[in-house]
Image 1 (cartoon, rainbow, N blue to C red):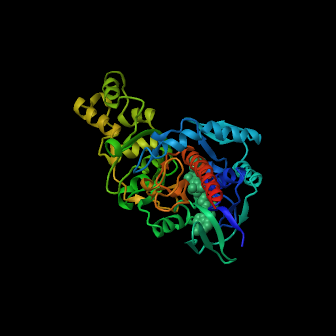
Image 2: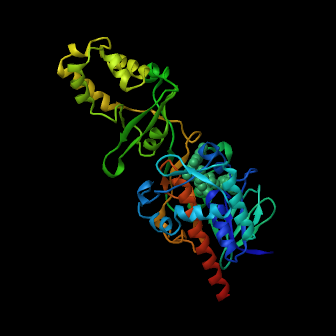
Image 3: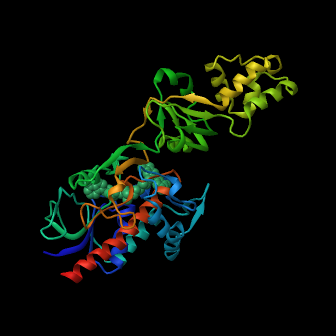
Length: 409
Ligand code: FDA
């Protein structure tokens, strides 16, 4: 039976990049995936235009129990490297917001680049194909049991991603393999996900569904906290939008999130100044600063007399309202879960992986890359940059590792 140098399981962002790099360095690579459609997450990403990287990607944009782990791979394969790859295929892009780069055409352009890179490396495809079991091979290497017979390889890269969006093929395969080989997992949970509230708490705000506005959002404290100025979107069940998705990755169940509805101004100061210069009532004044319906609902739910003239309200009341507008504290009852989460937080514990090669410290020749490992990026192209960078690191390292095995055998 043909023995491959490297088997990669998972033909998504990280797996295709890894297979292409290893194949192009002359190794015999097989790429296995159970899904009938190739790289579905790339296809649906960025609203169909794939926010494929972020110009500012660096370790500070990632959450992990081991925050320095991602540093080496990200430094060795940067957003500029991915841009150079796209340029070779004449794929054009544009910057949307805060360094986020999107394809001008569609996400398919990125999938085609990766497919072509795999072809250039003569990667053998096996898909759709289920892997029922992974075993270690006598001596060195691995055997993958599949319905069309075993696949043997000297090195194995697990690139099956996280748990988000099971409908398009996400599974816990990586975590099962990690456990099988004695690896620890960092607790997983949905991230970059809308937040939900108890129906009774949310009833007054449900009618705001569809309204969006820029806010400052914060949650947690110190190293475990975060703050973002981004858009918030009201939904029937809670909050979504980029600011909320960012905060959701840091949010701990039972904890509140703080929303500053007026991030552009000192709300207390602005209300006190308005008292001397404005003859309007509170609702009309706030409607100049916020979407009118949000102002009305917020005032009603805070027991503030919306029709009161600003000039008639005592300074103490205005200070109180200003402070509440800049720190609206809300406690979600949960999230929309993996069904809607863009990524999975947690995963294979990186403290048992090499940060330069992604190889297991427990099992020589076994690698974990991409979203399966405990490295979770912010919203905005950071997760793909991690997939590319960890894929390249493992592709180069697995090629080197299997070359060294060949020279000693
Ligand atoms: P990925 O999920 O891409 O690939 C895993 C592969 O493994 C899949 O092909 C799957 O079929 C396969 N697989 C799973 N289980 C298997 C098994 N048991 N056997 C065989 N194969 C198996 N990020 C970003 O940077 N910019 C963006 O614009 C977006 N947008 C976005 C939108 C939406 C709706 C989602 C859900 C996610 C995003 N993301 C994103 C996140 C990004 O898609 C994600 O982080 C990367 O795709 C992760 O790449 P991986 O290769 O690790 O997993």
